[in-house]
Length: 401
Ligand code: SF4
Image 1 (tube, rainbow, N blue to C red):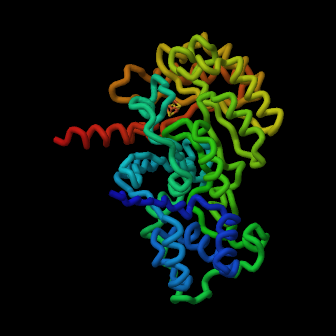
Image 2 (image 1 turned 180 degrees about the vertical axis):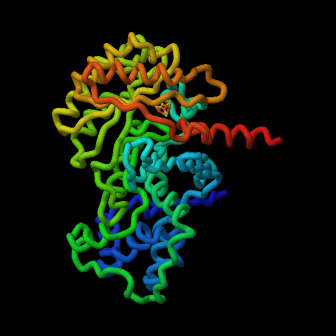
């Protein structure tokens, strides 16, 4: 008996494609180049989630796109806002997995002066394999890497959710080219840049510091950041994008070779191997000697200041005896230190130090000529540590009351 063979074709998502890649496809379809520009506007200016909303495109082209690409969007499951207006978003992906993004507006309390800066903290994996002892995201291990479009859509989905009430839908007639810019030049042409720079973008800065170890999903992350940085895409300057890592030394060296000038943050949380080994298993693979050598290489290649993220945990790394090694590392790498009081995670034993102990740590560090800040409260009341909202929601789904 002959058995039938069923073929499944997984369509590439259109939000995983660069303008150049789309242009190459449109050339094969013998579509004029301005159509690429129109599609990009629908995706990144209007944040469209449905092919049928792309009304400036002929219906036949919409059908061709639908048959060739998928157009997935994140589904909002839960949203929490804290008293200081930090907003936490929990998203459901197409396979049912949950991830988080956090929108952090600048506030006078944090930056000493009013600012319209809006920073979005983006996830790169579902769960995390690195198992830092203080972190909710690592508790259940790694489920999978996020796809390019799942990273890209965090920006668009947050902006969709935020601007729903504010921005009216674009009124463009079926098949009408008015309302979109003709793009007879290649997509990286200066005219396209001017158009996109003028577009409204709620989010001004990205920190790749949400759930997951960003550099463990290197290729998808870099492709997503190319799209989020491009003038035809997210239009967020590379200098406004900070990539964080728990210490993957080889990938830091790889990142140093990327042409874009991203900022690098090291989730340090301990300035000696003894302390890091206690709370960050990654340090056994890449101890401080290797990590700092990779940071020096990055500094030398990029000439960009590195940031150390340092979560203050009572009885682990917040004692004044930790200040000297931390100051020595920071001075050697010309790094800025961000002190972050620990956000308690249900089920984990760690505590944040008292406010006076936090202040004393900051004073001692600054006294050693280190550029340092202490994060005053942002999101403590909304389970703002990475992975907490997802964990809580999964527990509720598993044990409904
Ligand atoms: S802190 Fe970052 S690297 Fe460590 S377990 Fe959590 S998500 Fe993973």
